Image (cartoon, rainbow, N blue to C red; front, side, top):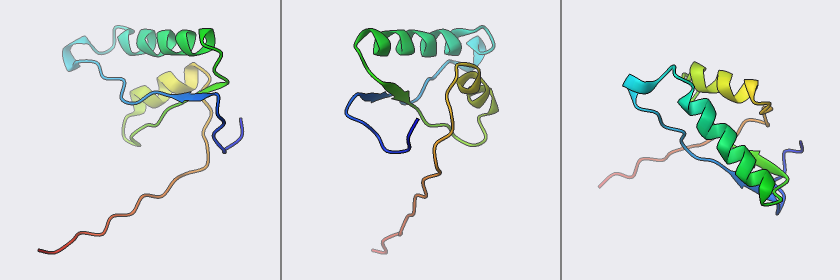
Length: 81
């Protein structure tokens, strides 16, 4: 996959599963359904993000075949009142 997004790319944002329900395959099922729907709609790729400490979701994404893209650096400038 190229790093540049294409017109036929989709994205997912926040795959959330309540703490008491984690470890039951729900997150994986949500991701698989999203991939299936994206493919059925003719999308070329599905892009997602991960918080670095969220090892469980990084593992799910890797298992499903997501490949790392070049890192993006975000910066913040606090504004004083």
